[in-house]
Image (cartoon, rainbow, N blue to C red; front, side, top):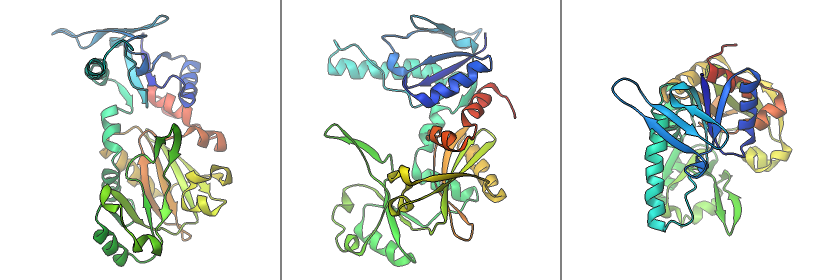
Length: 321
C-alpha cells in the first residue's frame, strides 16, 4: 500500500497537523523520529539487480515496506538514540553507521520529498540563499560577511544609512542549561568604535531596509501563502522574533515579480517547502532577507487561517488545489 513516510521529532506538533491532514484524506502514514533508531525502530533494507530498495522499517506497533513509500516529509528529527552502555568512541562510530545506513537508504528513495534533506542542508547556508535570491530576480540588501574589522569599517563607509548585525547561522544556543537567542540588532557608533571580537568568527552585516511591515511567505510546492507581520514595538520593528506578543498579522499577496523570483529560487535549490522573510518598504518594494527550508509555519496558520498544513499534505500526495 502507498505510504507517506514522516520523519520528524516525536513531539513536533506542527507535524501532528500534517499527519492529521494526511490521515483525514485517507492516506496511509508511517511516522518516525530518527531518535527512535536503533532502539525502537528496526531497519532491514535490501537491494539487488532486479529491484530497488525494499524491506522494512518496523516499530512495536507498525511496519512499512520501503518499496511502498510514495513520499517523505522530512522535518528536523532528533539525533539517533544509542544504547547508554556504549563508550564514547563506540557511540561516535555507531552514530556514523546509523547516518550512513538508515539515512543513506531513506535518502535514496525515489519518491516525492518535502523536502529532500540534501537540498535542505545546502539551502541552510545564508551566503547561498542571498546569491540564489539575487540571481532569481529578488531584491537583496547590501551584505557583508567577514571577520575583519577593517572590512566592517569599509562596508559602513560604502552603505548609506544604518546597518544591522545578525547571525550567519542558527541564532539559538544553549548556555548554562538555558535556551538563548541572538537577534538582529542595529550597529551603533559605540559598536564601530570598538570592534574587538569581530576577528573571532564570521559575522553578517547588512544595510538596514526601511520597512512598513514584513512578510512571512510560506511556499509549499507551487502554492504561496503570504502573511504580513506588523510590529507593535521598537524591538519587534528591528527583529520581530524578539517580541512575538506585539505582532499582528494580515493575509497578504505577493506581487508577480516576487512570485516569479521565489519560484525560480525554489527550483534552483530543489526545494518543495521554504519559509521566506521579506521586508516591505513604505513605497511597496519587497526586499528578500532569508528563506528557511525548515522554517516554522504553524503559528502563521493559527493567526491567519492560511491552510499550510493541508497544502503540505496535498504536496506529499501530489494533489493540486
